Amino acid sequence: MKAGLDVWRCDGCGKAVFPERLICSKCHGSSFRRDTARTAQVEEISMIHHMIGQENWEKRRIASVLTDAGCRITAGLLDDVGVGDQIDLFEEDGAPFGRAKND
Image 1 (cartoon, one colour):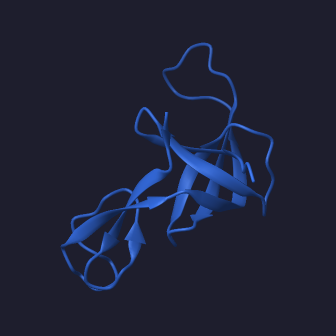
Image 2 (image 1 turned 60 degrees about the vertical axis):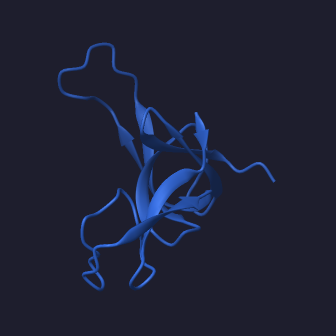
């Protein structure tokens, strides 16, 4: 588990994106630098009830979150957080996750 989430920031306009892009959707630049999003605010929550091709699937919560870097991402939720809550971001096996913020 890696604390924080790697995001990429456009060198031309500063827009943060995840995952990494080849071209910035705002300024069409093609140069990005790595940055880190550490926290996010939960905006919307959904539940994945089943996954095609998977056996013994357990329901999982995912959320649309606004990161402190300024980009919106979809992240898995590990705690019983709600809309509006702040979460700590981390990466596990290349996927973004969040859990209740530890102040």
